[in-house]
Length: 113
Image 1 (cartoon, rainbow, N blue to C red):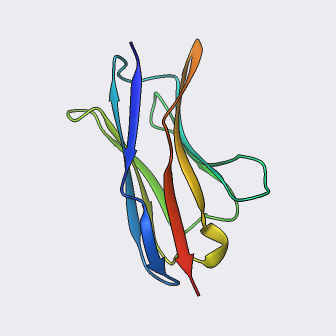
Image 2 (cartoon, rainbow, N blue to C red):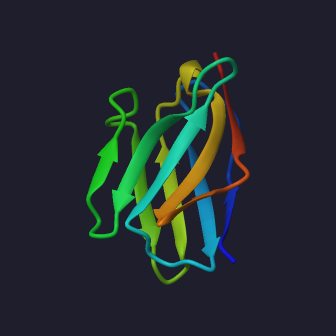
């Protein structure tokens, strides 16, 4: 059974940093691994992704501020978020796609101005 568990969210002031973690079990490297977010009243959007070969992609709104990475030994996906803005406030979800779509339960990130 695949399970993704996010952690690391919280309340931070604008300009601050947070690191989100996604601990995976039942699955190791997937063809697609990524982070999505959903703000109140908005659709869920892709923030950053990593292919199995390590190629990464970022939404234009977070380029230069967010970094996706993976620790294979810990089977954990990370999202380092720097220079946070109030517009980054959302629930952040970990997403693995390997035939099926697997989602974590989400972690709240709130950025105060």
